[in-house]
Amino acid sequence: MSAPAESGTATTRRMIAVMVLIPVAVTLALWAFAWPAARIAPRDLPVGIAGPAAAVGQLEQGFERQEGAFDVHRYDDEAAARTAVEDRVVYGAVVVTPEGTRLLTATAASPLVAQLLTQAVTAQAPAGAEVPVTDVVPAPAGDPRGSVLGASVLPMSLAGVASGAVVTLLGLRGARAAVTLAGAAALVGIAATAVADSWLGALTGDWWTEAGAIGLTVLAIGAGAAGFAALIGQPGLGLGGLLMVLLGNPFSGVTSAPELLPEPTGLIGQWLPPGAGGSLIRSVAFFDGAGSAASVLTLSLWAVLGLAAVLVGARVRRPGPAATENHRTAEPAPAGQLLAG
Image 1 (cartoon, one colour):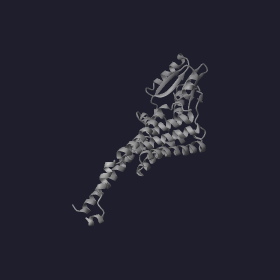
Image 2: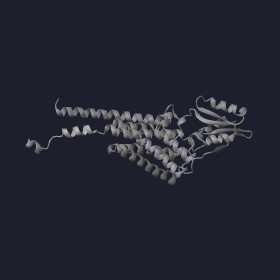
Image 3: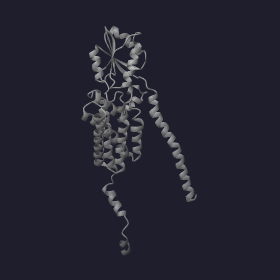
Image 4: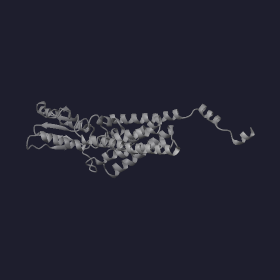
């Protein structure tokens, strides 16, 4: 076969590959983003009930009739239930007293869950009875629907993947790569907190703790992407982008709650840095860090293992003294030496 014919065949193959791969990628993206959103429903959603055993029995049965929807926690009184909400043990609690039933919610934990609980408890109340609602941990006035936090996950994911890609494509290795990733993550944390907290008022916790949470999230994402690339080459950047952006964002549950997503996407999302980071930022911004241990552990593991992969990959790929010497001896002699010989 002639060279022009071979070139034409290769071009045709590339055309077919593009025509096939783009629809496949779009279908995968639609599945990852649209499917969880279309299947929002409570799944083992932690809720509390408080009051005398005889009074809350019927209420508990009402929750349990929706099989698999709610994970009911019992508390002795309203104070204990309120503490559980503030500690992120439950999303809300129903309190039964001689005066009637009232609901404790936390819109800062999830405005969607607070609305869902209000509807569920109101539906169980006697006809015409009102159920007073107390927002124990309200969402900030600057972001009452949690839109800013929900919209922040994608930029953090892109920033992390971009930092891992730039470090890889610039050829930075070892300690230099690790320092670059950490420095970029720290600066992103400061800049993002300045926007979300100082300017928009969407975060209301300790400023530097919020910056640290955002920075740790970006570092975990960037180190993960760079670590994959250090171990398996540039295809690792594609793998990092797939996990952090295409799966990590829709599976994070930040715009709703992990317990509202189809199983096991909510659990998978909390194992990935975007989901763990969203949960950590919510904890430090509105709950004084309560319920953040699992998120900190997940992000720390991604960051440490990713940076370790970057350091190990640099050593594995670095040519040794013997290889360098062989390369030097294999170099052709200068033209002058050849003529002299």
